[in-house]
Amino acid sequence: MAKIETNIKNIIDKLSDLDKKQLPYAVMIATNNTAFDYMDKQKKEVKGILNWRKKIPNVIKINKATKYKTFAEIYVNEKNWGYYAIQQHFRGGDRHTKGLEKFMKSKKYLKSDENLIAVGKIRNIVSKNIIKEFSNKPKNFFIITSSMSSQKAGIYTKVTGHNKPILLFYIYKEVKYKKRFDMEKTLLKVYDRRGQDYFKKAIDYAIETAK
Image (cartoon, rainbow, N blue to C red; front, side, top):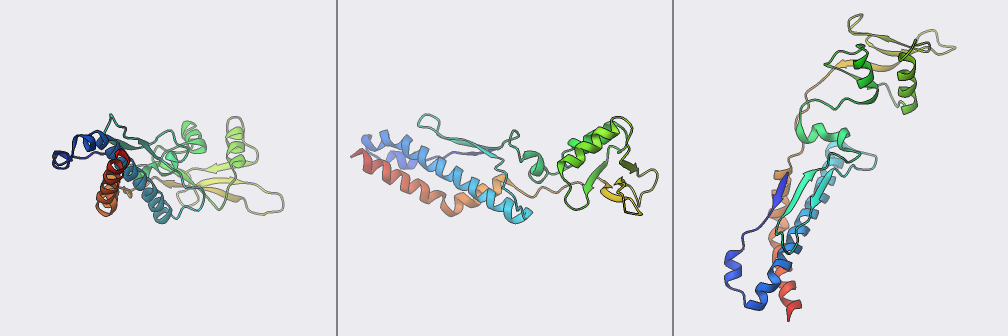
């Protein structure tokens, strides 16, 4: 989590009593403008670095500054729909395991350090059907575990008219993701480029509207 706050004691000492009353309002505006500027910057980084083509997950949450709370808090929202898709890029380490992977591990078809990667575009209904069949006795799907063959490990399906089974998911060893997004560094970039300007404009506006 990152925090935006300011130390403007030197500025306060130079202001009149009327200006001082408006100062908390100015600080609130400038701090929140900086926070939301950071959010926009982070969205652009996600889109650019990850080449995200779908709706960009807005995993950043902001607790805004107020006239009585002169700082804004910025953090990764773990309840957001896209958090599980890109959390490893914020924190590094292992990719989150869910759905079919989680099920296959619970049934011991996958080892703890193995994951699945789809071959092409696989609809969610396919994963649900695989889970349904492997919960009982599979008929249309079968698996070759890494213990059977490291080169052919995967989940396959049999299709009428095809001589060979069709590979749906590869089984591969987990990889450790490098941390690709640094919240504090990005926030400092935003502040260095536009932060001071936000504070100057907010103070000027607050003083102007007080008269």
